[in-house]
Structures are given as structure tokens and as C-alpha cells.
Image (cartoon, rainbow, N blue to C red; front, side, top):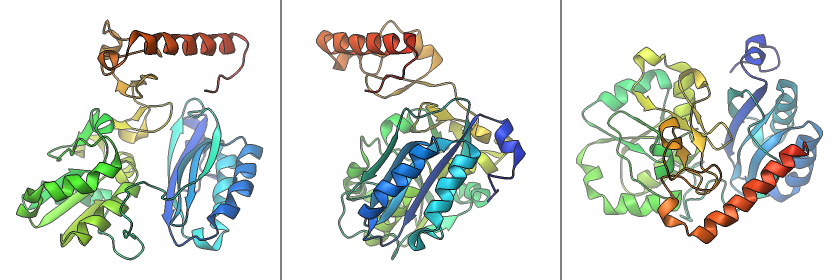
Length: 313
């Protein structure tokens, strides 16, 4: 892992460093970390979201190299997070509006009580070895993300469960008995965290050879050259960049702030698109009353910008 504080190439590719991180560990004192962690992030101008729970930490934050370095150093100074890993990308502008540190029941919500990735998990596969695994005819490739994420990019030949939330994934597995037709299951997600629980669940359900992409799509797009890639499309990210592509370059998608769906440049030309109000994905699911409410929100955002303020809401 490159030292973010000493690599000048990182600073040259975008004003802000974005760090995605998670770590599963028994962490009974998680509540006590919230205030000092939030205070440190605020002091350093770091924004994003971090989730703390009995099972560990998860989140994405952005700031200067030095600021992100300070937060990561603080976290790794906690005995539970000494082995914390993170993934880096760049953003041309701050991709988050505010800083949030939340206390949660789970750091990624699956809703299955007895799943513990620190005890049972699938076999990690490095990005450089991923193509060979998913090209094997004895492998079923499963995307564990939700439908709005898979809509803009997937691995070639992957099965898309078309889930709305990760909570739906266990039931989808139970209903799809055909998943037992091949000996190998290969799973992937954005940064790796959902696959920690998804592969643990698959092992619990009796699947023997279960694999997952180490570091997720983000690590694959960072390390695997575009000319060798089996990735098709862009990768949805949970910040204002909306998507990233090979080399973790910022993508060209926008976000519909009415339904949170990623939209392409072509979809912006749709008669159903109105910035902050509607898009072709949600127009028919919203009432005119809803759209007028969204328009008022957009007016407030415009007024805040005119005053040189940040609208939060």
C-alpha cells in the first residue's frame, strides 16, 4: 500500500484524497470512539461517513493527504484497528457535504444475526487472478450490489440479483437453487465489505468453494489495465463523484437527487429529467406534489450558493 503522505503523484491527480475503509473485529467499546473520531475529522476538515458497531468500522472519507493520514493514523493506533486497510482514489472537488460518525447495529446491514466474517469467510482472490477465476466455466459469478449500482457496470457474465437492498440478498440466495449447479461461487462488490458477509452467508448455506474479489471493484479498476479488463461500464460510488472508471478516474454520471439513481449524459436529455427534481428512473413513481417539493429544495440550494453558503438538507 502506497504511503499517501509521501507520494507526490497522488496529490497531482486530484485535490482531495478519498479513503474507503472497513475492518471487521470485535469492538464492544465502539460507542466511546464516536466523539473523539468526529472531533478529529472536523479539526482536519475531513468529510464523509464512518459507521461504528460492535462488529467494527466501515466508511468513506475525503480530505487532504495530511488530513486523511491523521485520521488513519488515529484509527490504527486503536488496538482493534491496528490491521486496518484502506483503498485510495482522488476527487477533483470535495465529494461529501458534511462529516458523520454513526453508531450502528451492523457496519453493513444484511440482517442475518449469526453471520461473523471474523470466523468464517470466503477465499480472497487478488485482482490479478480474478479474470482467470470468473472465466472458468465451473464458476458462477455473483454481483452482491444493488440494482442502481449494477445498472451502470458489471463484470462480464455476472449474475445480477437485482436487489433493492442488501437485506434482500439472503432470500435471493435461498430461492435460487440453481446456484448449486456449479462447484465455484465468485462474488464481488464495490470495496469488499458486502462480500465479507455475503461469502460468510454462502458458506453457512452449504456452498463449499466460495471466493471474493479482494479490495472489490475499486481495487480491480486500480490495478488491472483496461486492455486486460473484464469489467464492463463504470463503478457506482457513494459520493458526489457518482462513478469511477479504470484507473479510478472520475466517471461521467450524474446523480438524480430525487431518487438517488446514477444517470448518464444521454439520460440528462430525457424530457423526464429536471435537475434535482426527477429523471427517467423515477418520474412516473413521483407525484407532481413530490416534484414541487423537490423544486423548492433546488431553489433553496440555489439561494445558498448565491450567498456563498453550503446547503445541507
